[in-house]
Amino acid sequence: MLTYLLEDESTPLYRQIYENIKNDIVKGNLTPNSKLPSKRSFARNHSISTITIQNAYDQLISEGYVYSIPKKGYYVSDIGNPGKVKRSINIESHISLDIKLPKAPPLYEIDLSNNTICPDNFPFSTWAKLMRSTMTDNKNGLMTLAPTGGIYELRKGIAEHLKSFRGMLVDPDQVIIGAGTEYLYGLLIQLLGHGQSYCLENPGYKKIADIYRENGVIYTFANVDCDGIVIDDLKKSGADLVHISPNHHFPTGITMPASRRYQVLAWANEAPARYIIEDDYDSEFRSSGRPIPTLFSIDGMEKVIYMNTFSKSLSPTIRISYMILPVHLANLFYEKLSFYSCTVSNFEQYTLSAFIEGGYFEKYINRMRMHYQRQRKKVIEIIESSSLKGLFRIIENDSGLHFLIGLTTNLSDLEISKRLSQRGIGLQALSEYYFDSVSQGATDHRGRQSCHQNFICEFSTELYDKREMRYFILNYSNIDLDKLPKACEIIHECINDK
View 1 (cartoon, rainbow, N blue to C red):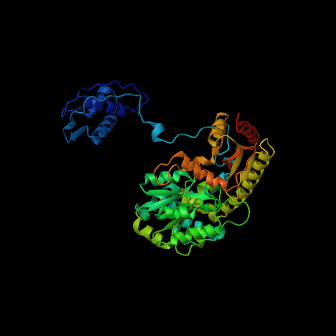
View 2: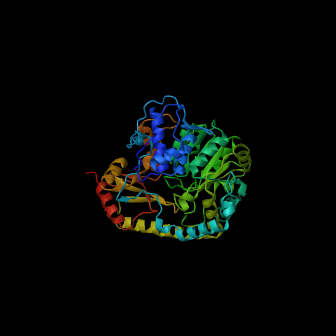
View 3: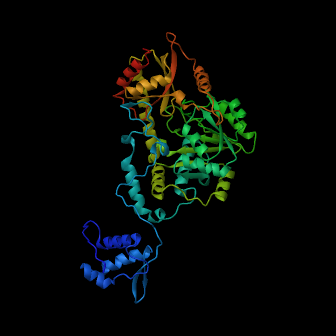
């Protein structure tokens, strides 16, 4: 008769019996095809119910450790020779996290390049109200699988928003919703084919290059001047697609003028397989004048793929982005990739749809546009009244949530960033966003610096006491204004060459 000590009060009795019998089978203490005690005798021996024994036996049978023969009883299965099983409560995975996962950004006392959104500005009460209403009134919709491109209500809401805010005429079926632009980039690559080559802006957002690299596509770079991507570089790249952010380039903040936009469109029209990916990531936050027309809205040849995200306008944790495909590519998408499921939860899609339809999104954007306009003004006023007066220059175009600040010093920008970091100040140099390669083949640091200096020369680099101006990215979306004067004093100390 099997007898076990059942003393673990935190574990159900059936589970303890199951574990003991399983261990005895694995260790070979119970041999294959040997008969186990009946439920009644086993229960009587341990002074427990037969239901407990039945549950333990059922679990063992479902996992293949035990089999039953009707009217005869329960027997040990032949599981082969598993060898000795080493059990340990100390689990060590030995995964090299510093290689497998991106390193967490350093924590600064004052981070001037942080692009997060202040939690106090998010409309939590409105969002919660709409979420509750959605769960109460639209249970069927929440439990129905969304189409590949996302629920129609949200796609329609986005199309209407783009018509009123950006002057874009879009059919809801041209809208494809996904969990972040990074996911949508991958869909585009599959839609257009891995044989296409891509051209990226230099400087630019480096994660885009990482995504293209990991998707196994060819990519190259074209330099950026004060009007945006350099057309001669684009032509020399031999690319089929160009990925640009013409309305507010990151990191320079440049807005591409109409003349350059039509040059890019002309480049795309020169070959049938050429397309432009227009990344309009923070177009809502233009503080003065009407929004700049998109490339999509002036494209007459179906060459522009428009992309935008709610991660910038609402919150980085709301992973809802969308792309607008030209009609012929939208048809190709549903023909080729309609087997994909939409990657955004119905709960979030319906809530965001109600947020847009109810006019809350437009009100929120208008309120935040005013907030960021005041924020930027205060930031500039604080810098101008600090000891940096006469030693800095700001380059901005009343758009987006960041600008460039130039500091006069004969130190390198990376040395300044290093000194500031040691003093608890985060400030990223513009040169950090230049790519080290022209086409996936490495070039030396001098090539990168040359591109950087050529761009800076466009701004008529000024000299102060034979010192040059170094440019940095200052993001004011979540900056602590009370700490900014202290940061300015530390910057003044750090740009000194002593």
